[in-house]
Length: 158
Image 1 (cartoon, rainbow, N blue to C red):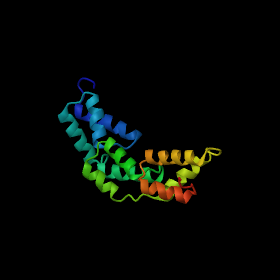
Image 2: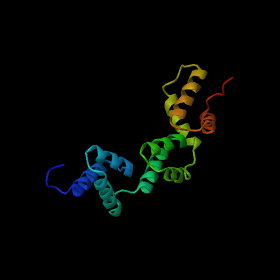
Image 3: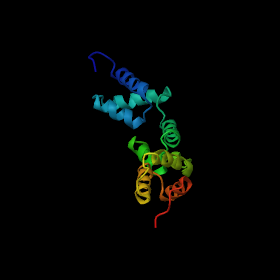
Image 4: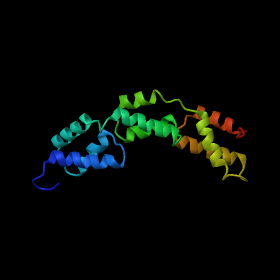
């Protein structure tokens, strides 16, 4: 921060710069501004200005993250929950955003089919285990994984 400058304006300016790269939660902006050395009262003022201008909205941010995670990244509920918590969103917002998420076995099956192309020649048990691990890391529930494996034609164990 340069001497003589309004610290509130400097904080808002830096936050707008951060938001120009990607949308962020209030907690993420607060953390970045604090790392820059802005005092707590300046953080509160700057975040209030950003909220009033509609530049920061945790509800909108959570909904966008959920849309991206389910549509582009093909992530399950557990994975989405972890991503929302990582970004410092309030528990109520996380649960509200997750209430609209329905795990789609066909999305998980799409991941399976894409990944299976590189697994030809491996034993069926190895393929199944690796695919299960992939979907589990993406945050899909065991029920969704089972259904996706069936949809993809991956043979049952045993």
